[in-house]
Length: 212
Length: 191
Image 1: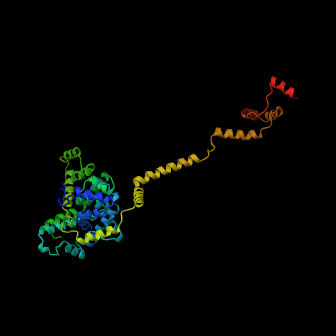
Image 2: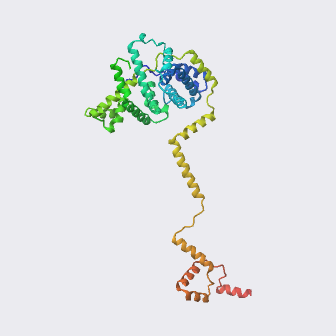
Image 3: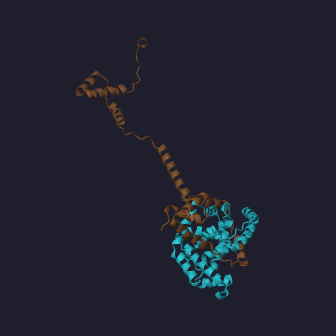
């Protein structure tokens, strides 16, 4: 049974809800404060999606601006961050469609260097504990597999496992029914199960001590 | 060994903690006896565990420059005006097939109803109606109701005479003065 990831703890507090009410009333300053609360987490999600820090920053900024412009659409039936991530996922899908970008470029060429520079690791793998390297590369592999899924399946996987909202919250954020979310999750997980890259390579990864 | 086809979705939802208690209890009882389903649950659980292990780059922090850029973009952008909100609502609603299809169907039904209501009554093509129509048109060409004419038609055919008498019997009587004993006396006085 999948345990919920402790990294993704919901950040909505009475304070942020109060800021949200003020922003809904047209207070741009209050929305700016909300952006400060969610900015880092949203940027991490964007980097996890596209693997390119520059593009991720643009995506996260545009997501926050779009959220401000369309704040009237947020109905409070899901966590505000889940709603932000739904916007982020749509924007990323549009960028891919527009630019025909290859997703999951995190560990490829200059994007890898850029990513490492931003994360402060500066490509010094020897300085990192082996376990951390292994975990990071496993996570990258898992993301590559997820990004091979159709967009609608990627969305539910991302929101369920990386944003960690309830099925009802995901349904509200995507504007569909809970049944649809469950059905998409079933198909997405079943496809991942069938992926050789997901099962065989991960077990291979473990046996070879993290050197793919 | 393959899992039972009807249980695959339930097994995935069990792995996601998305089954209610009763369904989960039934499924667990089945899993004890079915190796295929048990293996499927193990594979799906492996996938969900791998996904749950994923990290969202905990080393990354939004810089002050990032927040300043956001603030600048927010200043440049304004929330949607009421008109834009309405347009977005209708755009979103009409592009949603679950709303669009019933709406189109309702429009078609209303259109057909209005068209039918406005259309003039169509002449029925039933045999009875056709007979009545032909009788009406024949009535215009009927000879005057005199004994000589009746004899002439009877010489041609008794059926024709019967039809002529039926038509004339059905035709409304022309407006004429009907003389009775009292009205005749009044008429003589006026002459």
